Length: 68
Ligand SMILES: [Zn+2]
Image 1 (cartoon, rainbow, N blue to C red):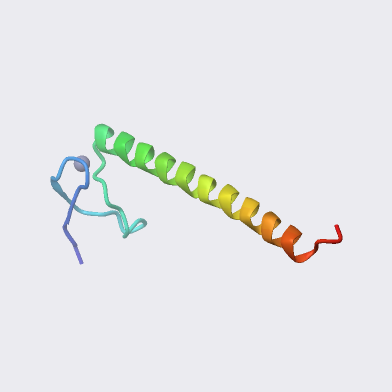
Image 2 (image 1 turned 90 degrees about the horizontal axis):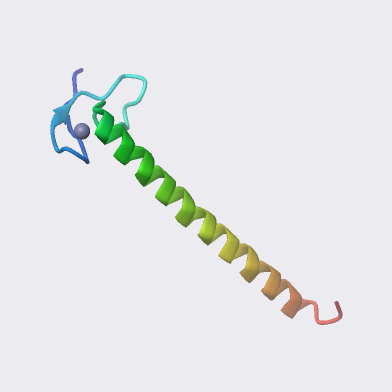
């Protein structure tokens, strides 16, 4: 089963590796760099969300425990 995909960066068709069926970028160096950059951005966003959630948790905990 040779599924053909379109690279998200260069928009060329490519075949994802069997080890990585969710692959969205081809193996071109520029596209791998774009993939890494995208991943780092997502990670930064996720970290920011995570920290915001933690702060919200602490605040609601303090509101529910006014004795502390
Ligand atoms: Zn590509």
